[in-house]
Length: 215
Image 1 (cartoon, rainbow, N blue to C red):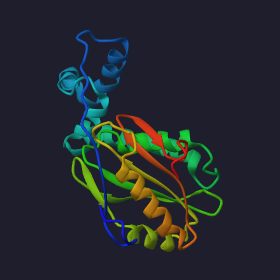
Image 2: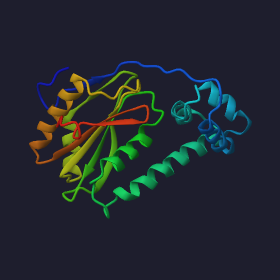
Image 3: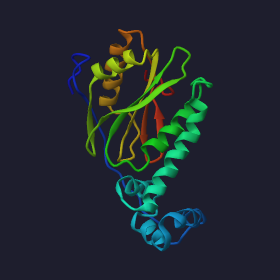
Image 4: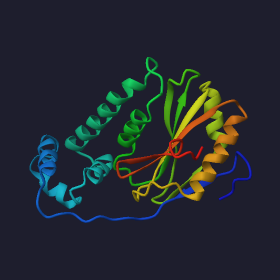
């Protein structure tokens, strides 16, 4: 990783993890299947099983699959995100890490590649924009501080919340994550933009660097 200037490309990496599945359908599994059948019909149970009974993985399939059922699932996910974001619109200030992390969980759900996203906020800490800025491979991506600074200036942002996902599910900040955060914080400070938090997302979980005292 090269952190020598705000225009350099920074990388963050992940580790792999796996989990086993029980044989019997739980009450939660049955509820998920009931919700999936209107979208996937008779194939719902087979697809659920093929994806390890993980709704997270199934949403990952829906992101790239064709067909009306998959399209409807993606639309439902989009509506769920918009339902959460209503509380983060200009009428509400960004004061709840829980609300932000819930929105980010839906945004990154089922995503098999790493990506880096930024929430751009006003002086009152209300949302101006939320954008995926960089996309990577399964294990890493490059982040260009100059592009983040440029977009913050275009939006006249006063603060940002950073977020990236670890497809492996590991949400502990790596040394590379800490370096990335520090370089972005220093670069944005030059144009009076504050970094409020950096969330790491994985397997429907979130780690807040601000809550851990790492900013």
